[in-house]
Image (cartoon, rainbow, N blue to C red):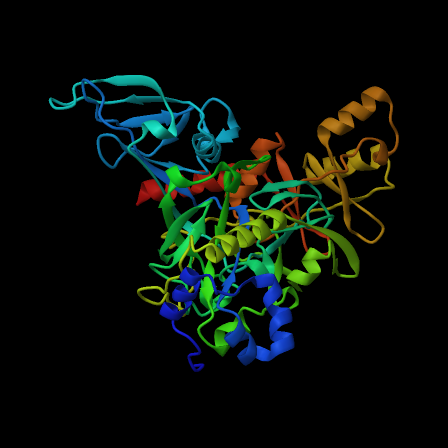
Amino acid sequence: MAKTVKSIEEINAKIRDGSVCVVTADKMSDLVGELGAAGAAKEVDVVTTGTFGPMCSSGVFLNFGHADPPIKMQKVWLNDVEAYSGIAAVDAYLGAAQLSEAKGEEYGGGHVIEDLASGKQIDMRATSYTTDCYPRKEIDTTITLDDLNQAIMLNPRNSYQKYAAAVNSTERTLYTYMGTLLPNYRNVNYSGAGALSPLTNDPDFETTGPGTRIFLCGSQGYVIGMGTQHDPVNGFGTLMVSGNMKDMSAEYLKGARFYGYGVSLYVGIGIPIPVLNEGIAKKTAIRDAEIVTEVLDYGVCRRDRPVSRKVTYEELKSGMIDIGGKEIPSSPLSSFFMANKVAQELKTRVEKAEFLVSLPVERLPTDTTFKPMKQTSELPLVKDVMTRDVKPISEGASIADTAKLMMETQTTHIPVVSADEKLVGIVTAWDISTAVAKRHEELSEIMTRKVMTSDLDEPLELVIRKLDKYNISALPVIDRDRKVIGMVTSDEISKLIGRRKRWKWKL
């Protein structure tokens, strides 16, 4: 461990007398390059960090006070967004990612939180099963943040150390928590503030842990423990944080809608890092070029998504990265402008003696990993049900050739392939009927070119969702080279489900 240069008490004394030296994390690398880690540790007292991005695992505990006559809220809605009320009579927890029952993904918990912080009136209604001491059955009223006894933000998982980036290898657009991903690797989305991110500057949690004072959405908050999915072994540490929402500013928390996915809350977090020694100074000098993450293919909907490549935040922030020789535009979901504003605002507050630094009461663990969910029964996969004896047809074939192949194979779906045997389309019995009625002759005139596909290891549940969502009855199964290796149909899925039901009944 590096030798101590100064104590937390000495740094706070400097804050109080106005002699403290504070720099933002993005400036620290230049200082260390100029003065060396030892010199920078003597010169700098506090390094401020900042991040501002979508943090779905966020929410607020609310206490509404008792009505007259009293009600024990069994269910409660704020602007038609349901909050969890299974705590006590008039307490509830509003999650940022909860959707409005009236507006769906256009409005949700994150928007309610922003509206409360902005001083807006919120429609609140609640229902109850009634008891002798809580006889009221329902209530319908309006509230503001000032009307609440407490509004305590408690976010189970914030401020990831870094984030994996996302691409899409499929033929269709995907709508995810990583934003809209265009088909065929046409964009890369990523999150996090890179060299400004709090945990990137304190990877071993020397000064960040339970009890650490932080900047949280414009107010003073605290780290209360490790966040859920805390995975420092793989560089994905997280924090659980809390603060008084009544002191927060709507400037640093924003409700967000992710089209086709849902809602979230943009959260502004800044953590001051006291520079106690040379080692801390060196760690806070990290550059974007030294922060490496993975680009994951969200086109493969499994827990262990394929890694397209490793990339640095410097490359991501450049606006363009290379994948397989193809230049792909990269876009941040986080706001670097707001992350920098958080770090600057925290710097100003420390310099004005409005914010003292603190050390954690205990260290966060550095040896934990994120485990997958335990599943007592595995979902069947495409390879368990697909038909492997599939005969595709060339895109240059005639309608007559295609109709003949359908009769020979007794199938209603034929994959269409190019000269190099790669999937380029699909044709159905309905397409053939339409072609005859309209007197088309060439297959290329009638085939569907935008084809929903599957792969061997895709869970059948996801296939069923695709079939239902796009009102289709079959999917070609392809390999990584887009060559057809099988077909999965609604008929085969129905047979498998029927067999499983009969098997369970026999047990």
